Image (cartoon, rainbow, N blue to C red; front, top):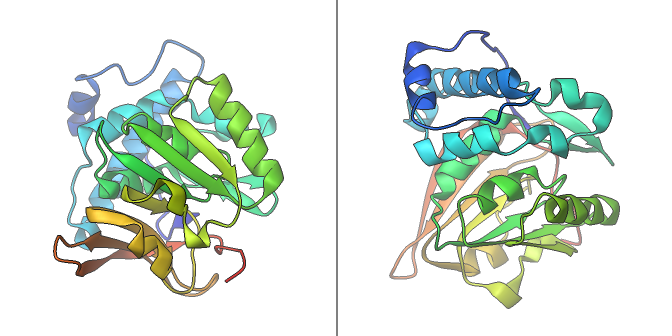
Length: 248
């Protein structure tokens, strides 16, 4: 899951240094320097894509969480040295952990807060769920590949994310039991936006979703449920995600 733009930088800009100084971006561990470089790369990519997104910076809360969540715990052990590169990585079963910029952008677009109930479709390794869980009250996440889902559940429990509930199943139709949601984040691309997900949004809720066929033009979309039942839809930028599989 990645953006068309892959250029990275290796120095922290003055602007990002000021942001980082406002919070403890990472613990004193072996990955601290890698985390800081990742934050710099995210900020650089935000600036480079501002013509698409209208954003020159992401919410400081999101950037703080990106500097906190231990991405190296969500990638295969043999790839830990690459964990904080601003690029997607394989996690097995034909799936990937998304580019950090994309995780940060989708989280920013979801506009969650400490009271939010969030649905994620496509748990993968659990990284996006962990990022959302740092900001939201409760995250429900669905993974169709049983092996990945069970591993993610154990990983999230081990890391103390007790506000994340993992389900093995087809997320195309959402998780109606816990609806409506303040935000829904989909981490794989359907060819069309699932109507069930739109119906499971609260008034004012936001659906962040990539749409389009694999290996063709895909767009990251944001849909907002209006208070009167209408839907506002906005195209954000071109992306490349694995397909949303399942019975649909």
